[in-house]
Image (cartoon, rainbow, N blue to C red; front, side):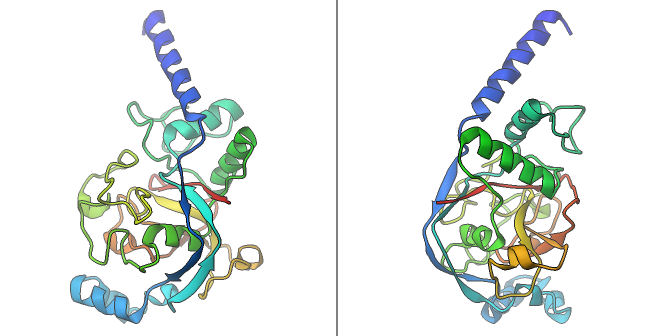
Length: 269
């Protein structure tokens, strides 16, 4: 590579870093109640429309999402998109933090600046939250799973962000056959939640601050949980859409990394 080309690429990267240091795009979620979890009526809908639901009923796999219950949340904000590669690269560039496992060397793949970052552990995600909070002088964090779920389904207890029936054209799951992540917002606005939040299901799983404990959800469980099973939400590009439901709960250990696991920011108001 010539010196001129290398300098140009370096300048482009610096420009991208400066651009990514702007405040992230956040969406305000109104205070109030919503229904969290999956109801028996919703399971009946899934049994009528989804072939996999019968096995889940037989194996009692919906139990972790039950009972459906009301949660009253205060006003908060959540990222309109998952944290992107270029946003995360700014963090690495300025701190020397370890790079995501799926990156090539010290950089994400060419052309993937606005793809969701993946291959990060929970501690990596929290370190990013701490760094951007310090730089922008406001407190960002991971959403808890109640905040994540309300942002995804709204107050109508939707099964998917757009309604109660799956549509492969609205999100990046195994059924979409993309076989990789896609640019943040690729499925907007048709796949957005009622609040205009993109990619809440499919593309990458997202870390939450929550641990896998039985419902009903209680915010106090964030500190008092005795389990090491961390909740991730939303499904991903190489998982079936059965896990890309607003109420679906998956769990991994905090040090788990995957090319299908990223995160988005939240902030109390």
